[in-house]
Image 1: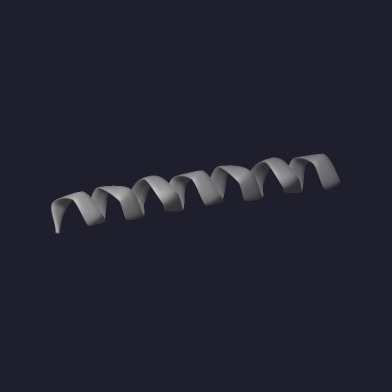
Image 2: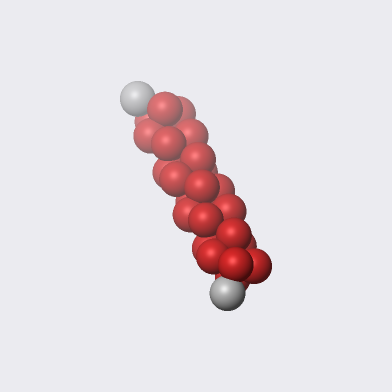
Amino acid sequence: ISKELGFGVEYWALERHLCNSLTLKKN
């Protein structure tokens, strides 16, 4: 469970970073 949770957090952080980058590029 610990590994899965850690992976989920890393994936969420990566998705959020990509979304922020795309938003900055659009604006």
